[in-house]
Length: 258
Ligand SMILES: [Zn+2]
Image (cartoon, rainbow, N blue to C red; front, side, top):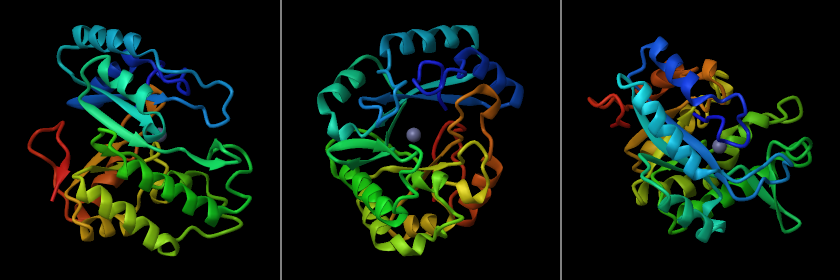
């Protein structure tokens, strides 16, 4: 999940999120704040204050000794920003390093998929460009271990104009999954804050392709941007993961494996 240190999560509240995690009976929580080096057209973007992030993690670990607090980061398009990425990774220890993409390139600049109108003006082409960007990320030498929300554009898909069917992009999906399995990445099952099956990124079909590609591990993320959204959709995610042959690790903070 994200905290107030992420540029897009002003209501994040790391301390309140720890309290909520304890309320829900969670054994652990991972804060993977956004390190984006380009806002993709959103004017409120700002770089992560990584020193403040590590201070806040330490403060919460002292406040909540009964909760395991994992540090982490979500690197946005890190393959395009190797020097900035290296600086963020060198700033302190991180338990979880996620790699992600939120944008496609348009007129030489990164454009966030969630910008109004971007997907409606040619969804299939935008989605293929997006998966090509994810393939570049996975092929890059950037050190990360979890591939976040593989098919993020699903969240903003103009379903009234065009149905979303994974099969239409099977070749592009499988290319990413093969590469990701080959480098031993963990695939994130992102529940989009409990948005249901349509907003599970990725869904059961892609999970089956992940298994066929040799993928061995799964991570769960609610992508909460505020404390009340923590762990939303995890019940659905665990059902889908189990149906695909994955099982919880004996370590409650560990990845699900098959
Ligand atoms: Zn993200």
